[in-house]
Length: 359
Ligand code: ADP
Ligand code: MG
Image (cartoon, rainbow, N blue to C red; front, side):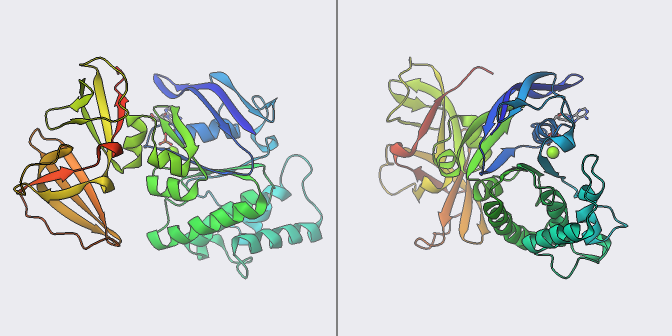
């Protein structure tokens, strides 16, 4: 098990990792979700040993990794840009690490051929072994980068935005393949991404990295349905976040006032943020009698079709932007009139309240 304890890494004035602690279990697919600049690459580089932390400890099965050279850590790294040798063939790129490693370089040609052939089969590159890496597709280059790491039999594989350079179709296929390759090898994959969809789809466990530390780590489904903070909810891109205050067991803001079942026991006036899922909002006409108690009145701006769902944007009177998702598997969504007023209603049970921490 890989363990980071209070790891800090600074670059001049920038604190890329800020007392970060996390446990990465064995035999798991972990996705690490974070905005650009949140420290994802730095975290991987510290784990791999390309950077030493300013403070804190990294251990694997209780053994400290600091001071151990990257190639002796048993950790593989698949770089964001693949970093292949352009003048070498697919097979030679994959064999490179075994052939030229400092310790115990592999010289037995038969064994080398066998191991390269095995990993080529594992990642689905059969028939391309002698091809130059400049003469294969982006998706195939991605597989070479993965194969080159896997052939060294690491315990943990770090993948830095591995699907970023691929187009949408290919990305989906590689997602499935990465998961099944990992399952066959029983190693841990730590997959870094800026995409919440990818993080939730890939990870058995999802960690959210925010400003250099782990905001939450949890199984994908519980992270999605029960984020622990407004910050984590924001990363999921599936929740409206409203800012207001507590008022007699209710949430009160300039655009809304509704009961908060299970609300935190706090004094009136305490700053509160509530998260409300895009797909838990029902849009009703503003002149259909009295508005339901848990609702927000807002004007329709625009809709966007995304394959299996429609995302609609509304703006409340105080300027708050609200997003509503209707899944196309349900009843056909109504079309709304631009600029018209609607009631966005919801079940108060679906509200997740958070006490707002001072910045
Ligand atoms: P991410 O991969 O999440 O986009 P990074 O880990 O690359 O984030 O960077 C985290 C922060 O550290 C950023 O503010 C970035 O500018 C800074 N940073 C990263 N590497 C260096 C470096 N070698 N020198 C100076 N600043 C760096
Ligand atoms: Mg990065």
